[in-house]
Image (tube, rainbow, N blue to C red; front, top):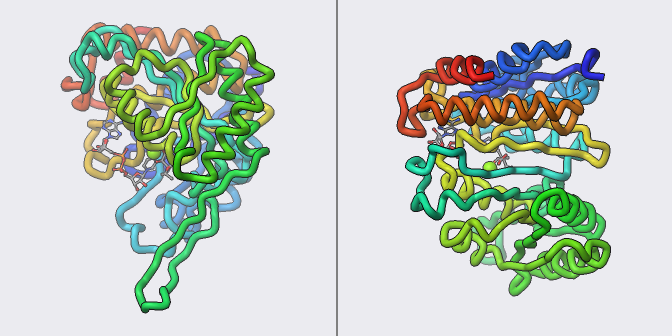
Amino acid sequence: MAQSSLIAILPGDGIGPEVTAQARRVLEALSLGVTFEEAPVGGAAYHQTGNPLPAATLDLARRADAILFGSVGDPACDALDRHLRPEQAILGLRKELSLFANLRPAKLFPGLEDASALRPEVARTIDLLIVRELNGDVYFGEKGMRTTAAGLRQGYDLMSYDEGEVRRIAIAGFEAARRRRGKLCSVDKANVLETSQLWRDVVIEVSEQYSDVALSHMYVDNAAMQMVRDPGQFDVIVTGNLFGDILSDQASMCVGSIGLLPSASLDEAGKGLYEPIHGSAPDIAGQGKANPCAAILSAALLLRHSLGQPEAADRIEQAVARALAGGQRTADLGGSCSTEAMGDAVLAAL
Ligand SMILES: NC(=O)c1ccc[n+]([C@@H]2O[C@H](COP(=O)([O-])OP(=O)(O)OC[C@H]3O[C@@H](n4cnc5c(N)ncnc54)[C@H](O)[C@@H]3O)[C@@H](O)[C@H]2O)c1
Ligand SMILES: CC(C)[C@H](C(=O)O)[C@@H](O)C(=O)O
Ligand SMILES: [Mg+2]
């Protein structure tokens, strides 16, 4: 029941706290009777405790019904050992909570044609969902630095997927396609990578249970090209962790800004972490310039996927659309609204 739901707020670093504050205001305005509890994460947590993902923060994330996450990343931490860096916090949460299915929707908001990097008639066709695998791939394989026989420094990161990991994300992709326009494009690099060959084989096996979904396959380099040539051809894209990371940043500029794309990271049971796809944006942090829409739209996904509140989710999405259509825009979209003013505009449109 939403009455007793606990939402963990993990604002993080850079613009994370700025955009999360606006998302929280919007959730509060809906008076859903939810409780919020906040904890530090990323560089903020490292500076306080020496650990980017302190036990108390992980505990809150486990106890909560859903997690609203800002962003992590702090240039002052870039020289730390990798396990101490802010980014380990989001990777750790995804892994510890088995949040393997990352949904990244991208759709052009009416009126934002001019903000897209694409021509308006192309931008208008975009309504796609990237289903990105989040617990495996080159992100979580063996990695390290070593010295070659010739005495050269060598970095390595092992890419791998087992068939169980591919099967469960393929199912998530087919299920999403079934709820949308019935088209699934699996993106891989099977012409070169064994990991991708297994990926393709398993996706084809799973497709036998989904005869109502039209499955296609595309190599990732072609997919990057097709995303800007004819993005309207895509309904659902299912892909691995690394390819999904890259393609989703690209998709964001096709609809106008990285400050617009939310995401849901789900486990098998529907528990979720919700975050904008963007990072901590150190170049604009602390200046009130960040676009809070991705964070606000992430709160909408939280209500829909973890709290069973689809009407409230629709209300938030419609309010964002109305605010944008009314000309309220932050600098990334060519406007002059501050982060807070954009939050005000969404609240006014609720
Ligand atoms: N999930 C996460 O927490 C996450 C995601 C991506 C990057 N990061 C981290 O963030 C740090 C910065 O990385 P980066 O610069 O490659 O990516 P970034 O997404 O933080 O920023 C890329 C560019 O987009 C702009 N931008 C991002 N979000 C914006 C918003 N809401 N409104 C307006 N402009 C916005 C930034 O100003 C910057 O010019 C790094 O430490 C990186 O590891 C974290
Ligand atoms: C910060 C980083 C670990 C993260 C990723 O690569 O998954 C980010 O780029 C994202 O898209 O959420
Ligand atoms: Mg990314």
